[in-house]
Length: 60
Image (cartoon, rainbow, N blue to C red):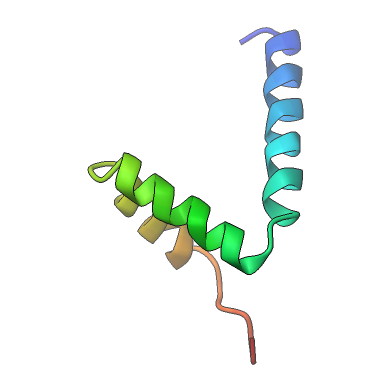
């Protein structure tokens, strides 16, 4: 992959992360629910994998 493509993908990923971290709890649940409904064959295993790779927040 060319450096410019890598830079573009990294910039797009940073923008997505910024948008996700700006969501409140209700909107974040809505996004996950939408993705589960929209991609029932592929998203649940990806979500499970992602959730197993992070620790739950303590007391939170």
